[in-house]
Length: 355
Image 1 (cartoon, rainbow, N blue to C red):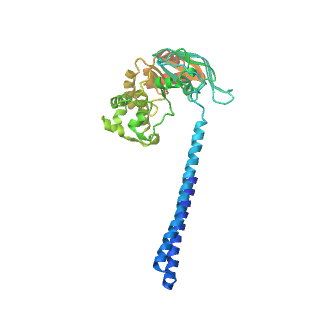
Image 2 (image 1 turned 135 degrees about the horizontal axis):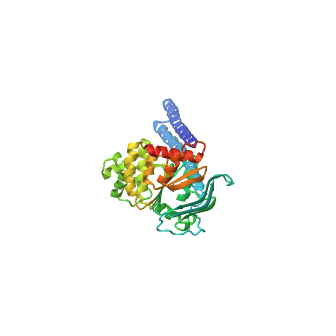
Image 3 (image 1 turned 30 degrees about the horizontal axis):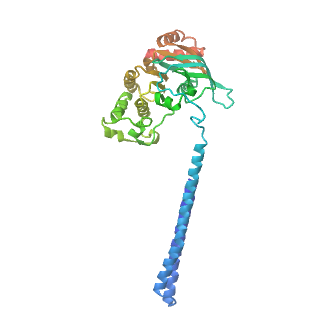
């Protein structure tokens, strides 16, 4: 903004100098013509010469403005090239063309601080079989989203190993992870462009029929008319103008369109009302058949899709088992108000049973 302001000031100054010089030449030339010292032709010639002499001044301001833009572009490129590589050239990665979602976590720790002393996640052991449907429950800040990031490969464990299909996830080719893992985080966003362009991020070869089907599964088809032309509806940056529920449906559609075998979702229905959530979950349940699903949620309705619950508190797994067993045990323990583990379980059980 500062450079644009200076560019505008210089351009205005150069234009003012040019106009004032031309006006001064006309006034002074007219006086000399009337006085008989020069002819009218001489005055016109002087005016043309003065204009051509000062014209390069305008070009100098344009050169300065372009130089500033080039300088900013070079700085941006330099910052980008200094970023750490997703896959260093000297590191060999494992090609995994068909991930099924068989996870094994062993003594996994994760810390945000650079000294890696304050662990926000400590998982001694966690096994997830292919095709399982799992809900991760816990209070705010318990470590649920961090665990999901580790499972998606978006974060690397400080200690321990996250193994997927027998391979350390840190050694799996990132292209294979992105292609086969559908990760819908709370930080996912929409970009300026058409609905079609937003959906095709990650699925550049998707057909219109596939896009319509993905919108149908996510419940977003009600946003548009059921024809291809509606896919050209304009989406503002960040999804401005759309409700929270609509944005979540479009982002869910984008993930569905990629057709991943492993689905990781963080609060996918948090902004939807109960009626819309019920419609989306009905469609989603059919689509999830045969896929591995791990979902972080506070919404009890989502528990209908899972057959296993993992409860996280203070970065540790405090309960893990079949959904009905965990909910029944937590309901029986709901009177123990001082037990943090039971508080979390009782809250989930109360909401789920009430629904």
